[in-house]
Length: 68
Image (spheres, rainbow, N blue to C red):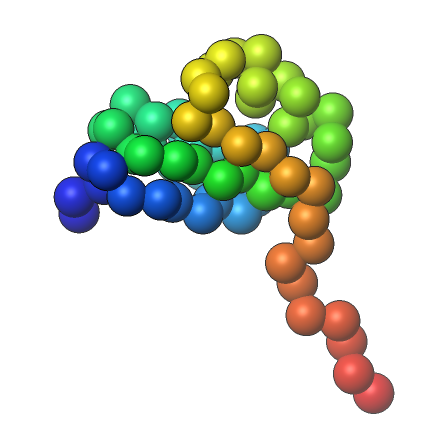
């Protein structure tokens, strides 16, 4: 998939595959990478690892709440 010049949204970017994907998108020339996760501390660590101005981090919850 061609990512160069595109905006990319990655959920679960605090660890594992989501984190690896966010970093890979930056490396592939993504215009802007929005990385979201539930844990603010993990996102701060990601920002320290990749101090790129194209990386934006936000605390978020992407799961749908249970409905009874």
